[in-house]
Image (cartoon, rainbow, N blue to C red; front, side, top):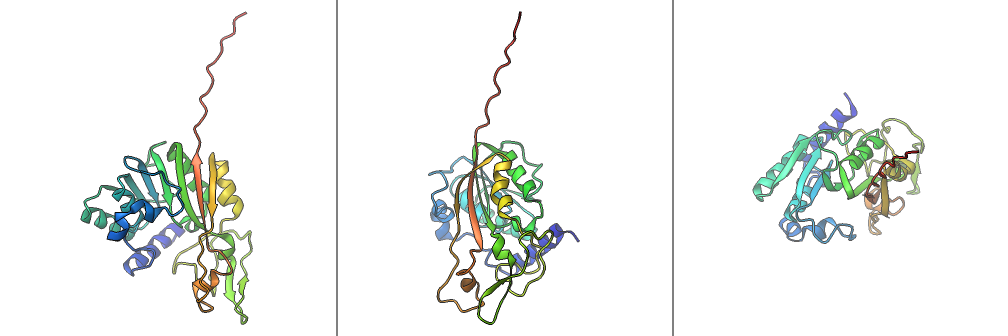
Amino acid sequence: MTAFDTNRAAWNRLAAGGSRFAKVATDDECREPLATLDGRGWLPASVRGLDVLCLAAGGGWQSILYASAGANVTVVDLSPEMLRQDEHEARRRMLAVRIIEGSMTDLSILADESFDIVHQPVSTCYVADLHAVYCEVARVLRDGGLYISQHKQPVSLQIVERDRHDRYVIGVPYYHAGPLPPVGDDSYREPGAVEFLHRWDELVGGLCRVGLTLEDLREPYRGDDRAAPGHFGHRGLFAAPYVRLKARRLTRPTPPHATIWTP
């Protein structure tokens, strides 16, 4: 079974089991959808009429919020169960959302330069080839288009256990290749999923290499001073689990007109 098949099955189970990562948008969130989506001020003041791709973002949260804000929304995800939540919520709220089941590494069903915004929650950890994802994002974005993404930080995926002094132990090499091994501390792993570690040169340098420009980088705080050792909030005090990136596809230069020289 491929990583894609394993992860699709894992996210089907997570959706059916009511995972905290598979919660649909609430009425309160839909009243202020952009404020819910964007606590950093990265989005434009209005997305009404903009074409938005919610990439690997099934589950009935992100797509519903963008559609509630007036955007033309397409959501791509590998899990039919997650997409079923988008479909159900869109129908219930009388919103138009285009739903596509597929891989984030192959968006060939989508035309070049067809989106103003691509918004991707934590998901690149489920594919080995991050470069393929970035290439597809750069291809489908229009000039000036915005790419907002969140990823698992490498050091968080290197942690394997907590020792008797409640210190978190790095046991996966930084240059590990292939699927990550099972670990004792799986605070920031999804059960049953196959995950991959992507280094900083891939996460940030990879954006530059496909022609995207990084405009901002944030590390969401997930620490909790009151959390007991072993709780994900306690671990979040020692290793930031996620990184958020704001990137943009700059306007491509127009090739100069050919000059015809005659003697």
